[in-house]
Amino acid sequence: MGRFDMQSAASSNDAADFGNSSMLKLLHGQVVEVYLDEETNLSNGRIDVRITEDTSAEDSNRFTEVFAFPMDIYNYTLPQINESVILIQAKGGRYFYTAIPPLNYYDQITIDDDGGNIEIDEPNLKLNHHFDDSFNVNDGEAEEIFGTTITPEFIEATDVSLGRSLHEGDKIIQGRYGGSIKFTCRNELNETPWSLDGEDGQPVIAIRTGEGQAENLAEDNSFIYLLSDQSLDFGDFTPSPESANIGDTYDTYVGSQVVIGADRLTFVSKADDISFSSTGIMSLATPNWAVDLDVLMDQVKALAEQVAALTKGEATFTTGVGPTGPATNAADVATIVQEISGMEQ
Image 1 (cartoon, rainbow, N blue to C red):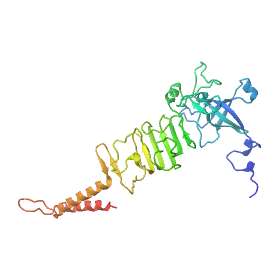
Image 2 (cartoon, rainbow, N blue to C red):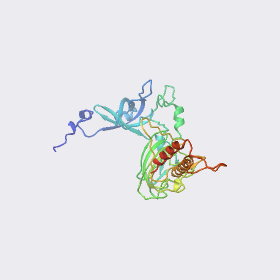
Image 3 (cartoon, rainbow, N blue to C red):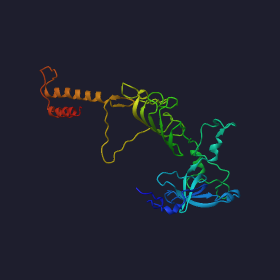
Image 4 (cartoon, helix red, strand yellow):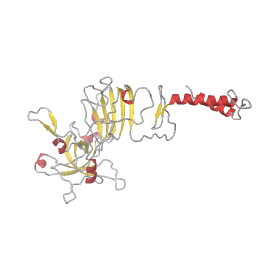
């Protein structure tokens, strides 16, 4: 193949928009407006950002307002007013990438005088709490504005959501309101619900909604854990009722498993079946019943066979005048037995 020409490469944007240089200008800016549809409050990603164009403007505290769109239109976080973003300036426009931590985030972390270990003054790092002395967006009466639908009351309500805690090597995708997907693994040196049993290095995916930093099955609102070769410690959370399986309890099983939990689970099939298949025991548990599906169906079949014997006269009731004859519903009962037997594997 010949030499690759970046300028003529196919793209949804004209390559000339980015100029002939391979270097792009990075800027720091603060969001002053997020454009929303007046009827739906939905956004197409456009924001207005206050920036300083150059060093002299920064020294004299002169700001310019520009608009920008997401750099990655398929994967981005729509920022709030007052948040800081990184801007990429190209010939065809400006594009924002992510939101950078507010100053108060750094206020929660200190580094010792020797430049050594990082010490966390407040272990519960808050992500959805913003303040920046360098900028001020207000309504003209010194009242801070956070957005069209992001009110001070909403900020206060979501201030309890904490940044997720990570171990070395983890990858996290998290929202500002307490939802996250963590890509991690088992490591016996790390204290996690999946670090008790299993092989080190095996992958784990933890999907959670909840305010806390660390995984906690008892306190999270809902969760899905995808484990590859681990057990899952349920901690202070005790399933009630416990599984109908008389073998391993929930928190002692070690192996590939998916654990789903919430106050309520709903499965909806809009156009076709819902199927459950198990090579082992399938159990159902309620406060009143603990049912092993194999045992239940064995008993149903045995009961049906006994009823069939009675209706056909193979088993009889003893009466004062002799045994009874076949019942008028013998054929119907025989059909039921046949259908139940057809379900047996």
